[in-house]
Image 1 (tube, helix red, strand yellow):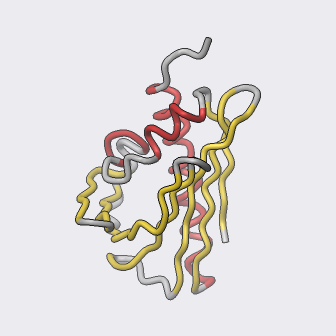
Image 2 (spheres, one colour):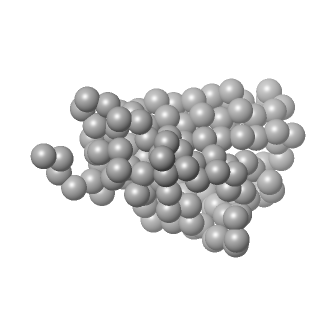
Length: 135
């Protein structure tokens, strides 16, 4: 298991607008970290900057809780289990962005945790850059 909790200088609705755009992670959520996304029905094929390619199936897109959940179903990673969720939670000074991943086998946990840590940094910057000033 790995998770990242980052504070984003944007409103929860602004973060959700980016987060719910499941097929545009390379353009809006993690530009540069993800270089391409191809959406086919409920599955997106994501190409990362390091060449890793992952097929991720959408499990849930919940606008009320501002949460997206997905699972890896193919690509160059071969977990026996993978479930991830991302959620935008209100905070006094913006939005708490929570990214949680459960993965098996355990040997994949450390490399994925490194990936998530780097991705979270890119997300924070991208989300803040796209946010309109809060009043």
